[in-house]
Amino acid sequence: MVISFMRWVDFRALRRWLVVLLVGIGVIALTACSPQMFRTSAARVPELTDWSLSNPKTFNFALSNESPNVFTYTYEGLITENALTGDIEPALAESWEIAEDRKRITFTLREGLKWSDGQPLTVDDVVFSYQDIYLNPAIPTPIQDVLKIGKDRRFPTVRKVGDRRVEFTTPEPFAPFLRITGIPIMPKHALEKAVKTKGSDGNPLFLSTWGTDTNPKDIICNGPYMLDSYATSQRVIFRKNPYYWRKDDQDNSQPYIERIVWSIVENRDTALLQFRSGGLDLSEPIRPEDFELLKREEQRGRFTVYIGGPRPITTFMAFNLNQGRRNGKPLVDPIKSRWFNNVSFRQAVAYAIDREKMKNTIYRGLGTLINSTLIPQSPYYLSPEQGLRVYNYDPAKARQLLLDAGFKYDSRGQLLDSDGNRVRFTLMTNAGNTIREQMISQIRQDLAKIGMQVDLRPLNFNVLLDKLDNTLDWEAYLLAMGSSREPNDGANIWLPDGASHSFNAPSLPGKPPIEGRVVADWEAEIGRLFIEGAQELDETKRKAIYAQTQKLTQEYLPWIPLVVERIMAAARDRIEGIEYPELGGIVWNIHELKVTDHRVID
Image 1 (tube, rainbow, N blue to C red):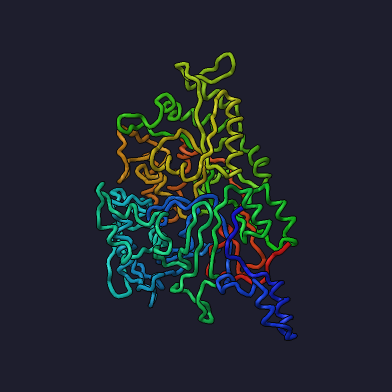
Image 2 (cartoon, rainbow, N blue to C red):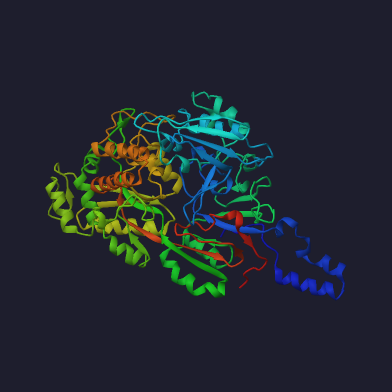
């Protein structure tokens, strides 16, 4: 069990010592005998313990493509989004002005902003972050995909127009641009040299800057917290950023909690055990199988269980549709590639998966069947009642689709392709996530009923991401992708050249080229519609465009949507200020949270 090495004092013991002090009995002697009295002030600061299933992959936000990550605590952008209302609110920028032609936004920064090392945070940092990092073609950041505008995929321009004013100009009206400016601002004084200096491979040194081998204290931040220490597979410790800009109505600096300890646990069972024993202050997300147990223990354990709406993610299964090669070698076995690229094959798999059974058994009835790549909370969501195709469990239909596509069955009921090859593939997910491990186990059973053999491969999360992002050595996977109310936030997934277009990965800067990659017509059309949707300012027309993207993804199934759980979390009652939103995220307002002095001791 991973336990924070810096814990709160035992307050019951402290109260006993205070009684002794008040009656004046042997204060000096008692102090000398009590190890509690020798604890440093650091051991008594307000502290919160959170957890993660995996080690951070990088401390460099621009190169991150994972969740959870450390950047929730360490960085902010010009604006932020209120998790309760979805409204855009000021962050590093105190205000903004949008020009009449909707092609120019001018932001005014707050006065006196500073980085965590005390250096001024200025307009120059904003210009540097966008111009030199996010818009730099030599830096393969996923953010570029959501910043590319129009059919020509042009970037906005950014320029300094005053000591505190910065202007963004887009080549054409771009509906989601204001929300995009919530991406973190990064420190010019700390990173400019790494961006401008190239290594022996010809790439900017920035690509290897601020990896997890960097001393966490050297990472410069602008969020409520800064990194303090990192022990691989044990913990990440954050401490309050003394230069963070937020203050409350009484002019007290925020955040109120001095330290956050992010324990790295081996699996969700361990996380649950640590929470129940008092070693963790937060349990998010709560698995459906743990809900009833934690609900029963709320009062005794001095914690509260919170429930939101459907989790704002899409849990899905995907096949590797990449028909390209690297160094003359196919990324996917050509035999299997023909199966995966056959839409009838993918539709048959979708019909063969018993999602109702998943919802009622694995999710204990606390799940929701999903059919769209957009979350139901999005105003652009298309429901089945509005014409979205669904794949309800129908193994007979799955078999017929396969037969019509030229597959056949042998005498033992095994599925063969037209050349007699046994249909068999490997399905991977991240190890330690028991829900997903159960899901792939059921998928193996379900697909066996239509003659397919599925080999399961749970992997360490970072190893899995390396396969998806770098080696491209995979056949099928089950994961979840976070989403938001704004569809364009998924442009890096759905544009054919997007950095997160993992089901048919493109060649990206700094990575070995892919030869012979094929982009399907439907795939290109989805990308075109995403561009058109971002251009359109009329909300009714935008909804119609994104409705079409959802119809295409459900027809051609680059993702096979499965089931998503309700958002559930638990937090110690010693934490004050929690406002649990419909879209979840118990620490979305971390700067407002406080901890009281009481501890849970059973």
